[in-house]
Length: 212
Image (cartoon, rainbow, N blue to C red):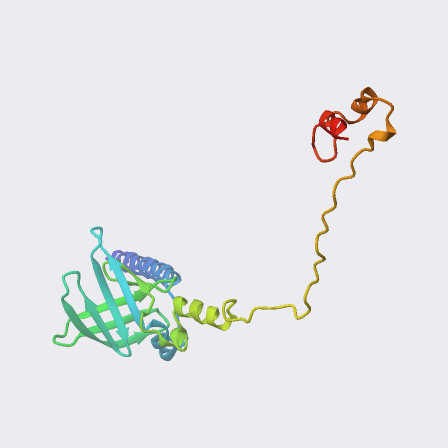
C-alpha cells in the first residue's frame, strides 16, 4: 500500500517536472521572438508612437502610446483609453488597464519592434507625422528648388557683354573681270576655241568678237 502511494507521488512529481520543463522552453521561445529592454525607461522611450493593424478589408485599427497612456482606436472610430499599469522591460510586454473598468489587456513587443496583442494581431509602427525633429528649418522641395534658382545669377539680369574695341571691316572693291584681247588672235576660229563659253563676264564670245 505504501509502495503504491510512493509510485503515485513519483508519477505526479515527474509529470509536474516535465510540465515545468515544457513551460520554461515555451517561455524561452516566446522571449526569443520579442524585443527585450534593459530598463523601464528605455522601453518607455522606444515604444512612444502609433502602431496600426489593417484588416483584410483594409480597415485600420491602432494603438497609440504616449507616456503611460495607450489609446486604442477601432475600425469604426470607437476609442478606448488605457493606462499602462505595468512595464515588463525584460519580457518585452505591457500590462494595460482600461480607465473606466478593471479590464486588462496585454501587449507584446516583437523582435522587429512591432506590437502584437493576445489575439496575435500585429500592429506595425507608423511614421509620426508630428515628428518635428526632422522637419525643423526644412523647406518643401518646391521652395528649395525656387530658392536655388534664385541663388543662381539670372542670365536675363546680367548685363550684355559688349566688346569695346570696334571691328574694322574693309570695304569690298568690285573689280571688272579681265576680258580677252582679240588682237592676240589671228582669226575668229582661234578666239572661239579659247573663249566660247568661257567669257569672264558670262557674255557671248561671238558678240564680243564682233563688237571688238
